[in-house]
Image 1 (cartoon, rainbow, N blue to C red):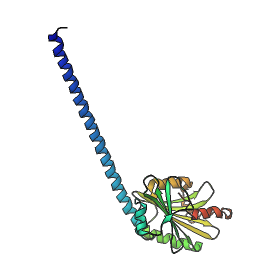
Image 2 (image 1 turned 30 degrees about the horizontal axis):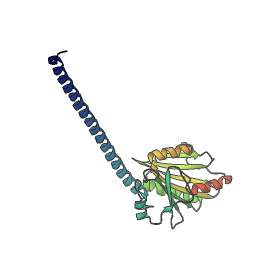
Image 3 (image 1 turned 45 degrees about the vertical axis):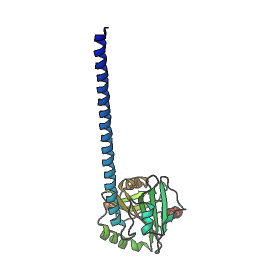
Image 4 (image 1 turned 135 degrees about the vertical axis):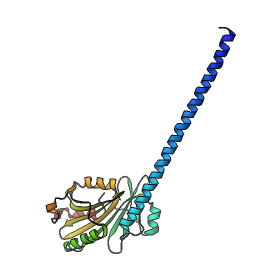
Length: 237
């Protein structure tokens, strides 16, 4: 091949290679820009959902735990609930648990996601003096939150039976859980994400309560009182 032939050919190869390099660089740059834009949209969406969740939880918990909002960290919770402390009685994989004893005898369990360190669920455990208090309690819940979106009879793996009244919101779910054993009535107000609430209903073996059984509450057997005591200590997840 003569010099007159291979020199122009070499120039064309160099120019072609350079053009391909520029095209590849531009394509990579555009892909990085698309990834950055997508990540930015996802962050903005998460921030928006977190803000809505905080607002929704403030409405649900405002009467009993003013200032507490899901989606906030432990510092934010302690700023409004200074007595909150790490729980030494329970361990729940994937969560950091904190507890609080209220002056009226009720107990609160706060569960923070172990990876994000943000509050994902709140459980407030209390008791009624007798079964006669169930009807007034349910009336007060109806007046405060409206008609429940679901009524469930649940039997978990240990045989503990509960009645759960649930309210489903945009991002959060709330459950009013009634546990009867002997003459005792244990209540749990449970607020968490809709996803976690669905899992909780599944774990507890919940099925929708038949209309003709609404007035008949399930009860726990006397032999299960110790297990029921664990429910009082925040075993519901």
